[in-house]
Image (cartoon, rainbow, N blue to C red; front, side, top):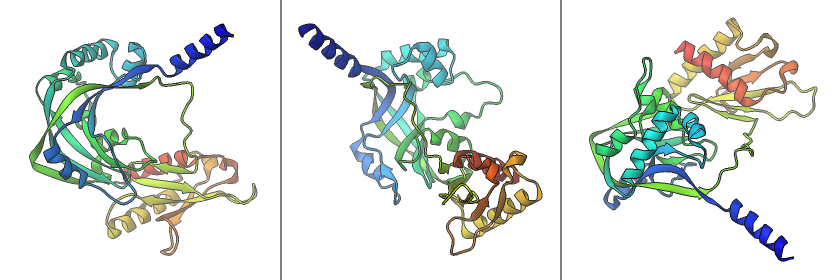
Length: 292
């Protein structure tokens, strides 16, 4: 019927509704794009449209978006209004370093003028300023999200850091990215057999049966052969001397044989067989950081 067709059309329109997703600076500098595109690595996919994200909106309410940005609602609204006034403005940004991580390559940037003031955050005691610095993702692995750069800026020890001196100045335009409304009820399901952190990648092995002992391996993401060997030896010895994680985990580690995948062989108790790689990886990363 006509009413039914109209209802279907209305629902389709709502499903396809375009909402504001995030404010950004789109790089508009042909002279420097070739230099930026040169930063690549096997297995990493270049970003199509280079930009610096300024403020995440996600089509959410102000309160929800403020939480997602780790801001008070008052600061979120202040930033949003300031960026609206700058919409379409040409700005400059400076690339001060390029950080290479096995899962992504990104540039640390400094904003200038009005756009820097618009997104300035209130600094609280104990805050790590670099962890909130803006960045420009150049390429990355499909397995990680761009916000990995935030944690790597705060602790870049797993990256090759290439300082850029003098900084490369880029031109860009402030604009609003829009797209289909997000569906927060539909959560992204992570692969439970793979964990990628700041220092380690952990993969769990398939089990032939429930009687098969759960196992896997950990691979250091960066470092020289000598550093990796030292880290693997120290981490394996530490877990043996002082068990890591809950007692029920019964995690055992040893330095992996040269002809085997990864740097550390892992196995754990059958009672903890349902643990995902993310949980094992988080335990190992925490211990590794304690040992550094």
